[in-house]
Image (cartoon, rainbow, N blue to C red):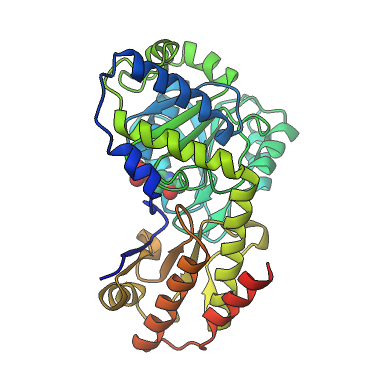
Length: 384
Ligand SMILES: *Cc1c(COP(=O)(O)O)cnc(C)c1O
């Protein structure tokens, strides 16, 4: 009985208004009603990225939009600079290699964001301008670390390097402050199922003028992901193939909700939940994975398990006893961390319930901890 607590950092809970919109009858994707919807969502999506440029919408998971960013802007053998900030950055890097790009990988400890000094050092040393793109994950969902993309841009500018800047915002868009135009990002990759409060199934590329220019001569093979026919069809609110009609109904509702609330307020409430969650973790005497005060994620908190205790056993117990799903540790972090998602359709009392479930789970699993985390979180929520 009661509702399932889906507290993984994506897919997230969807507002009822969004689910109702998606359940409307499917319409003719070549008819005038659809064209009007397409035109509206293509406009309404722009402010969420902080752009006035086009945003390409794919009926695909975020992984598809990663591929689209690479194949639309680069040529076989081009060099890309990647940063090992965690599981997702590593996957994107592997994809680049599989697609025939050359990767310069800056190693990382999975507890910090993109090292901006390394950005300047690697690009500064590349006087021949062989590096064609810098790939960065804004919010590393596997670690709960948010990279400072504005500072990455400043580091690129400090050495006057012409590489494109490609940024994954799959788990941050619509939840953490992000500025595609201001930070001169060339392709921003996003997905529907995290901050945008939709089910999985849509993904996005916001594109700069410089990215569109690179696209004209980019030699990588592409067909489904090709921006050109999509942007042409988008002029009339259409797609060259069947778009995810019903998800687009939901997208319009979600975008209206974000616009009505105001993005600043949306960002602030996520940071507040993150502060309350960290207060709980600190009171429990457990360790937060993120090590840099400037980089704590607003949308999830990754908690390190004490030595000798298995995070997956804790998660299984919490699922069994309290019907709550928490995020698993991924690859290198498997069993060592659990992740608390505090994004999507969410509110203070959901956070209190989430932290209550974790605190009870810690006790039942015999993990050494100090009770009182929920109380500490309540204090933050009451003051702030
Ligand atoms: C979820 C996520 C992905 C993968 O997106 P899919 O929709 O599962 O393909 C990539 N990067 C980040 C940062 C993510 O959070």
